[in-house]
Length: 145
Length: 80
Image (cartoon, rainbow over all chains, first blue to last red; front, top):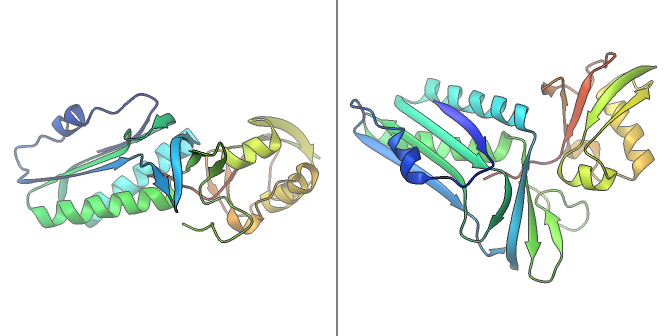
């Protein structure tokens, strides 16, 4: 039952193995990948930055809320920080439960809450050399979660 | 006057040009402190777009600041 930040590449095989539980009949995982475009602009790479102590505290609260709300047996969430390239794994979430419905629902809730609440920021580097902190625009209509 | 420690992240860090600073302020709360720093450094994000954290956890904007508090202004998050 955990939420962690990682400065190192994530290993989905090892992460999935950490969910193993004889009581579990279902495992749902979510992988967030770095894609090569956003809102019509070609993306070359991105940086994730976190306020680490509060990110881990808020992430732990989200995990605790999810455990209270859904009958799941194991939850593991890891979010990358640092410089990532296209195709890199940015976030990995895994849920194990006795039955599939709770695992699907809990996994969806976890990624939605993490995106909305955990103090992690993403800076995109575009093909034309410009950069942007996502959701931080103060002019135009680019802003918003 | 009180002494506070301010940490900056993401867009605010770049606009301020540093990650943290210790400063003296007469601001009674985090909202007033942000207004002071925004005017001084030309920070573009309006306070309505931010959250405040004091001493490692989210805090309401009107919470009074104390000597040696650690304050973080949290820009709109974008994880995942």
